[in-house]
Amino acid sequence: MAAVKEGSSVARLVGGRGDRALVRLLPLREAAGGDDFDGRKNAYIKTGKEVNKSAACKYLYTSPKKIWKFNVFLVQAATSLEKLKVLCKEDEENMNPSVLIKLYTQAILDMTYFEENKLVDEDFPEDTSLQKVKELITVLSEPEVVVKESNLHPKHSDILGTELLECLYWRRGALLYMYCHTVTAREEWQSAKRDVLKKCLIDGISYLLKMLNFRCPLQLNEDVSFQDIDTAKLLSAGVFSDTHLLAMMYSGEMCYWGLKYCVNEEPENCDIDTNGPGTSRISLKESLDFREIGEKILRKYISICEGPLKGQSWNTTNAKKILDFFQHCHH
Image (cartoon, rainbow, N blue to C red; front, top):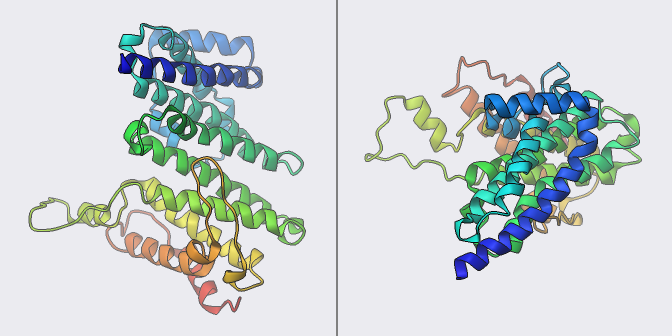
């Protein structure tokens, strides 16, 4: 009976959010081609084709193509939300809360992927992009809110899984990185909107650092045997994918922008509230000293690129320039 009650409660909770996500999907559908969208969705359902879901989680926002116009991820989001709607009405005894929440999470990742790439393609319009970024951060925080409100597990990783959590934090951090990368090129942001920029940088770095710490580095010892020693070194450094390595570089760059554009006082005078779903109150002095964090993470990035990944096309030129800036900057 307890399991039935638990499943029913989660079904109502996730089902309600799924309905709201479907409403959110409607204007995106129009942007993606209206009626033509339905044709592509039906073809997708009939053929059973499925794009590698990790692409929506870990896409790097660096392609020069207008990716957002290729709306396969909106199709996947719509399909997932419709499937979720059906599952939430099924027999409570067969209800799997974890399946519902993961399905909802994947739909959120796919849907926001389309929106994020549209923002990037439009070069983050000055009048509307900040509010849109805040909105997307909130939407990408929804799965953790659902887990918390469901009271299923004390740790989000127990029900969402490490990979999905990494995706959610990577996507928020990478979105803020791309936003800051764009606005730091606008002179007015370097002065008039310094506090907003600092808040975005601190939040972005926080998300990326959290993403890098969900998995424990592999402890190498005599009981662990690897045919490829370079792979062993990567795993022992906590690098489980290209995205982990890119998160290091993004974090270092954001620390550089923070020190260059935002710091005109000692760190102990800054106490920035990064409260939000999935985050906690973080003091800049305690956790996000731009220079300290930036130097530490970029040195690690360089050592990995010039060590186990040497010859694999990972460039360290910009990382070394930023380290030189940290060493000579007197903020």
